[in-house]
Image 1 (cartoon, rainbow, N blue to C red):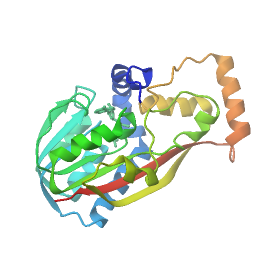
Image 2: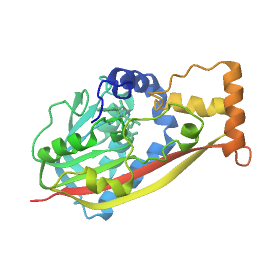
Image 3: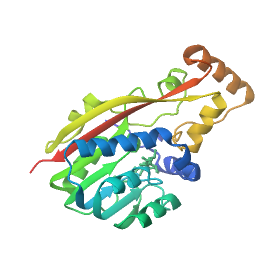
Image 4: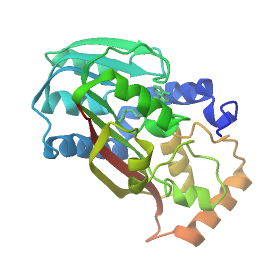
Length: 263
Ligand SMILES: C[S@@+](CC[C@H](N)C(=O)[O-])C[C@H]1O[C@@H](n2cnc3c(N)ncnc32)[C@H](O)[C@@H]1O
């Protein structure tokens, strides 16, 4: 049984962290950009149609996935959701450039109102922040029409393995490996494709790596209090254990899943 009162699932804290990073996210989230690109490619390769009447995207953030989705697919009506209540300026620009009607629904995807009979529900790099993924998947299945598509990316258990080995709390609550997704999805959602692959970024110093975490908002659970000596000690341990050609690697353990609601 999961403890929903644990700090792991503090929506206010997650919201604060992403809101703080919102202005810098779009430029710095290079791993998430690549992950969103692959999600859209997988949806196409899985045989999705070029056009959807209705779609919903949760955890849309600054629109890294939204933009790539609207480039690849014609969508008539798109419901966008994020925990952060103000839609990001980048998102507004992406929507303006596309021929789509949108509504923005703020709040946790676990609780907001969603349209029924959706043709597509999608999300990139967000589901790891959801405390009870099986419950959310059951809810999403109800909002898909028979034959409707689910296209998600999250992260596996080796997410930020370097930080976790060194004892950092920079982790999200729900990591799911590719081979676990079949058990996570409810009856009636059939897996069409899954994939898992590391996306590794490299940083010249610990301070740059920590800045990257802050600028992308992904350190929602880390306390972020560093003195000069704790930072020096952290960098020395990081270099000794993982240093490579003078760089500090940071592994995003990306996982993609494409599924369809059965009739
Ligand atoms: C790492 S960002 C990903 C943004 C975008 N999808 C992308 O691929 O760049 C995660 C986003 O999910 C949002 N988020 C976290 N938990 C959420 C929840 N329970 N419901 C809706 N959005 C959530 C955060 O506010 C943040 O904007």
